Length: 181
Image (cartoon, rainbow, N blue to C red; front, side):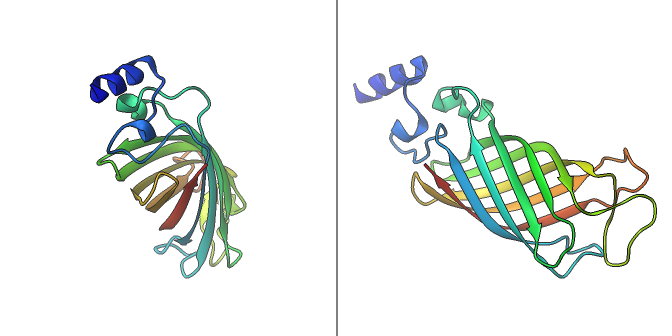
């Protein structure tokens, strides 16, 4: 009987994942993420760390929980290098895929602007990023400890996809904590 009632709420879009037995995540909330990344360990900029901050929210009502992965969340964030190398501001869309009630994977796609080296002449110790604007994508694997708190490993990449003369790109990886409100 309870299962039938929950199913009816999901079909009408009233229930969210946090209301379903066995699930711990409510995708309709505002989420704040903070973490630290290893800065592009295979590039001229290697050897430093980044601070990452990101906010996520829905721009429109999420799909029922069984289909919530179809509804992306809008994100806006920054990755700030602690050694004066390339930092960025970014925005885009994030899709969350529940693997179990607590384990999830994410894909983010969007754009970024950065303060790195542009133009044709490379600068020693810096990536030749080519142009100021770039595409940004990221992959995360995370674990929800509670409905409000999760940890995730993240890999982010930024490049201009060959649209400018130089395209060294930038790839960072690290850990982030997420709080849902």
